[in-house]
Amino acid sequence: MAQHRLLFVCLGNICRSPMAQGVFGDVAARAGMADRFFLDSAGTGSWHIGNPPDPRGVAAAAARGIDISGQRARQISARDFSDFDLLLAMDAENMSSLRTLAPEQHAGKARLFLADAPELGVTEVPDPYYGGNDGFEEVLDLVEAGSRALLARLA
Image (cartoon, rainbow, N blue to C red; front, top):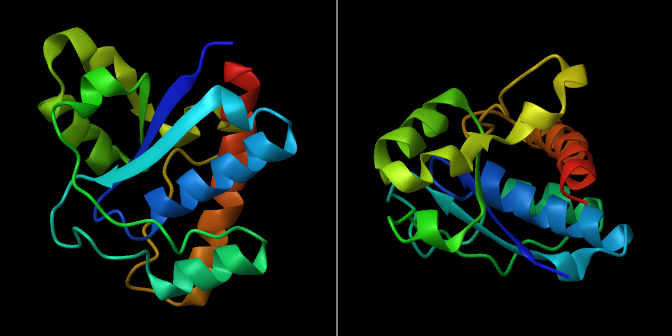
């Protein structure tokens, strides 16, 4: 079966996108479809290149049985647009950055991560970086619902 290549994108690649990568991988594995996906994450900014995910996100994900501690932040590159089938932006700001960076022939690959979950009533995954632990729990709830919806569409 063909493998879908998904890239989850946020600003610094230490909060939302690593959590989305981990949660989507978990959701796909629980559905018996992990082998259908190659997953990665990246940030539109360069501030955290090489850093692990935010410890608050690592702890929140671990409490749900998801290990994201081995991930390392990287910045998106032009090559990502040809290497991935979908580039999933966590919010409108990152979506705008993807549109700016995308080569014309790959512009249609970028979309908002929550586009397949309109029942949530939100279109963006909020950035929890400057808040408390509750923000990371909210992100996990949103990316879990978004992951289930995305998996249903791709399966």
